[in-house]
Length: 375
Image 1 (cartoon, rainbow, N blue to C red):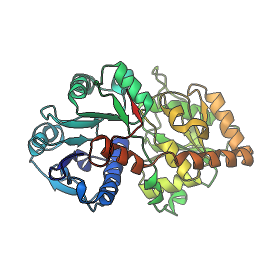
Image 2 (cartoon, helix red, strand yellow):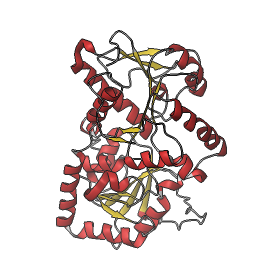
Image 3 (cartoon, helix red, strand yellow):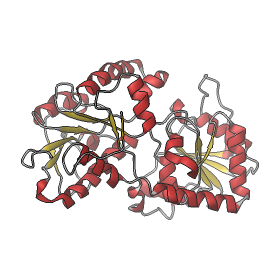
Image 4 (cartoon, rainbow, N blue to C red):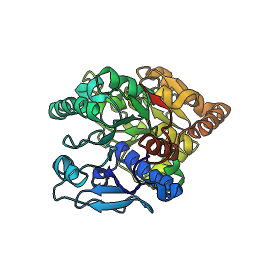
């Protein structure tokens, strides 16, 4: 185990960033690790989150873990200069894909290989920086983590690996139980319970909003809407650059919503449509299942690994097939109920607590190293 007198540090840059999937994972893993440490007693070393100036230090409620602001920069300069100075000589856990190049003791969670597998989805500067940094960081890392066997395989194929391989830290859903749904959200967005299909995502090509819009146009019931969370622009293009036909009143673009509204949208939807071309993990299907929202999802990338038989998996280019699946859920309450029950069973396999325990064991913070791992 780690020396209980030597601190372990966590890269807290996520506390100064807008919360997306990566930042959600960082916050939930730190919160769960705090619980693991509370049960470990005095044998566990102190863990300190190092955050940049102006960070939201109270974003994650913690008992055992300290949050400490250090340095004077922000963003990448803070991460590459201030952070390694503050953590010098100690193990540094990084949950956001990258780590300080000058630090010698990094443990890194790399979520996916999308910058290599889907390079056209990124600007050339970001793409070049990540392609240069990730192989070097991975080779030097004291420990490597990722979120799925799919991501582990893709990262290794692109040379983002070391001889120790990857330990898997899948996402969990405990955060959904802490959210009180906003009772007024559906009325505010002019949506009726069970009369809309939920889509989460941006205009990023990987999310396949174009396919979702084409799918809703093919759904038999003209009263069913597509509620689009995240994207705010109805001008959508297919991956090959063709404009998507205006969905008219069939789609509602809701923009960004808070957690309470998101929970209400999950709970009130006929289903979640998740037609992504690429995901390193894909948390929304599990969040939906946790709130009894059935899932129709892509059969690509990590999604079958995460959803297994708890979702209807369809080729994301098959808009007719996805529309037929939506029609069936709308017209067959028994099929919908069976899919909901499969989702309830599936989410029991994924907890932030289990991943935090695996993280702590792998790093020797508590107990012996734990599986699963991917070499």
